[in-house]
Image (cartoon, rainbow over all chains, first blue to last red; front, side):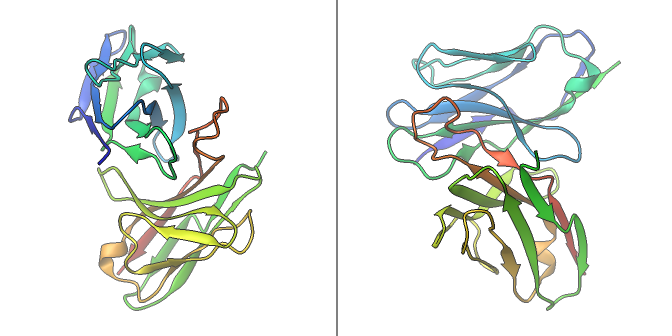
Length: 113
Length: 118
């Protein structure tokens, strides 16, 4: 079946540090890949997406590249801010007909000033 | 723009009581979902619907029921509440996930309903 595996958290960084949150997936064909972010006390919101191999999704300084050869979609940001503190979820929609997203377990990020 | 609206935001139930969590969206989305999120955990899909009159079980449907009589509304019913149902519940909606359009796969979430069963 389809699955998403994220690096375990929590992750704690100092402001302006480099961020990587690893995400690998299992799915047949070419799924669409997503990163969602959940700020404290809120629902999830889409951060970025990529729909085909070698696509790079980007938003708010975050980037992730769809790597078919390593089945990965790692989230990166060059310089994190305190306001980036949140839980980050990797997710996929399998190719073909799909009725739901498959989410990873989430990674808690805390950025200290 | 309202988006996805959930009510109530907070509720405390006694064991064995029943209640309905309301969810409404004004984006004319066909797909709607109910998730639960336990403390420090990821999301678990309870039920989903791909259109009015159509509902399907997700990963953890036991103890819950849903209905979808209109495109806008997707209420979640808890019968005989149990402490194991203490959680934060999120409703979400989306377009057809595989429509091929640029927004395919974007779920819009409500702010959540925090339920405690004592």
